[in-house]
Length: 88
Picture 1 (cartoon, helix red, strand yellow):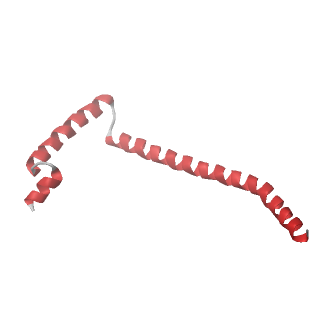
Picture 2 (spheres, rainbow, N blue to C red):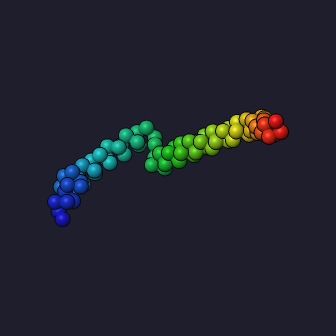
């Protein structure tokens, strides 16, 4: 089992833990220096996801508008053409 864990982590568990601690410390120092907290990063990420979500639904709304506008012309013309073909 230890071999599978080492293969998964890419190194021994102890060395991986030390690497993660050092990287976390460096990232924490950098974030503190520029004035960011993990909560700021979380809010930025969720705000980004919300904006993408809203943009997607606006695009679907525009698609629906275009479909409705086109249908207002195409469906009556189609029905008229079918009626004329049926009578003639």
